[in-house]
Image (cartoon, rainbow, N blue to C red; front, top):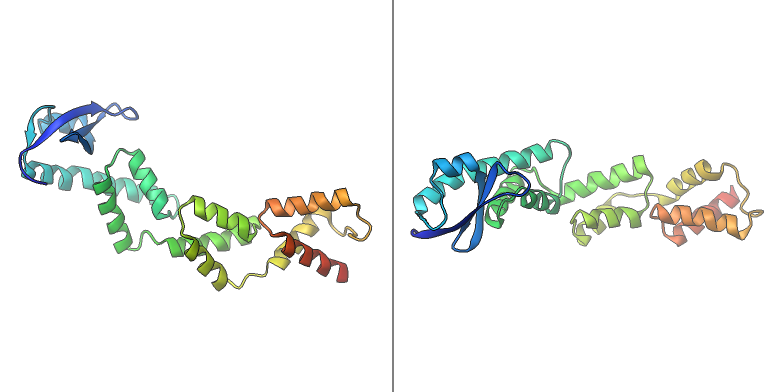
Length: 211
């Protein structure tokens, strides 16, 4: 940023009254504690030099944003979208968020491909979800469809065995030949709700009939 920038507003943050949002030349620039704003004499209508701006960003804003990001990653792995939403919720501007995201990628703290691999594995093994539900959840988290397709194709998954496991859990040794349409529809709807395609469900039921 160039010298001679003007602080147009210093506003108390809604989510954290102990912090303020600083607007420079009419646009949100960064969030900072009220105490630090007082220390650096950040007042509306006054100019802020490029040197002071850089010092604040390096020593306070970026450091705080990095610590927030690492703390957020401490609970579980995150996607890039999740991290961006989280940092935005902490009142960090786009430039700060971009810099933190770049750093996280550099040190492998963020990797949507690796995230998707783990998510697919755990969703199949622990939750017994089908591809459609897994894909839906990953897309909500911001994972690109190409990454999802790549991970799925590499996973060598046999959905039939998972469906058969769920069938055993749902109806035990039920006889599908004797089952009425309403009961069969209930079971199919249950499996579809877990993300399995109708064709895969039919294939699993056909296999069960043969066993």
